[in-house]
Image (tube, rainbow, N blue to C red; front, top):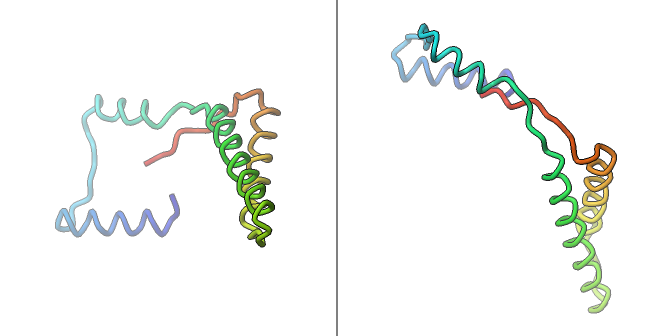
Length: 104
């Protein structure tokens, strides 16, 4: 989340609550929020699936364009290259790419 987004959300909360800031004092709620925000997410299989999908779509489009003898947009080649890059990253990390959970 960027600083501008946080500032905009804070302003919206202040408008909605008539100038009062939001705060949590219940320890159970605080503990639940910390549990939600802590930890990591494994995105290795997601990258593998997206890599296969992007590569298949890019290659299929390139083959169809070659059969029809039409000009291929650079975005189609970029889609195939992105698929290859995602497959390479998922392969080099052994499908174990851990990312921190996003903070809302």
